[in-house]
Length: 181
Image (cartoon, rainbow, N blue to C red; front, side):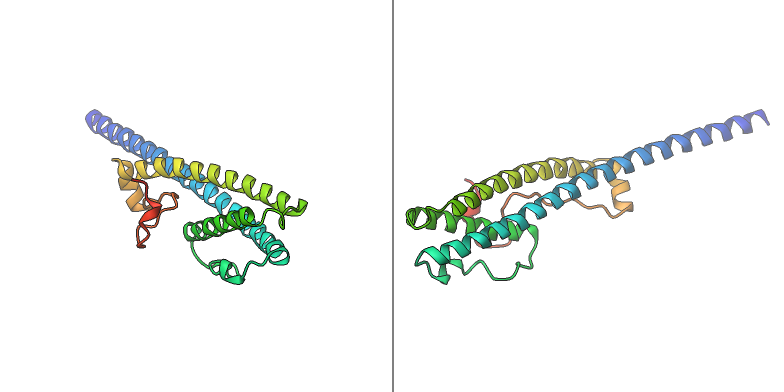
């Protein structure tokens, strides 16, 4: 009788320890998912802001230069319905085009409003880079937790998968220039 009570007590203690470990690892996974989602939200916000700034810059460029619409072919009139990864790549191309236009038309674009928007654009890009670094940091932590035992079991149970890094590279295109050698 005494032995049965001790065995039951040991089984309950083991189950309590396992439940505690499970809860701890699950909460650790959720904490990192929340951080990654926060960073992703911040990236989305900065991309929307950059899009709006570039739209305003496009208006000023069209009003003050002889630049044709062909220069803005990657910059559709509607917000592009793509992932944040692709949207960032497209906006980076457009930003590069705008910087070149600014260099080609320094006199025509010597307006206070244009300079302010270019400053806002630079601040936005810096904020976006910081958000991407934050995202990648917590994506790394999340991916490590998802891969390690025993948290990988909990991740599988809850269908938590590894996340992609926000590095501006597209593995599925033929553009090899986005990779550093």
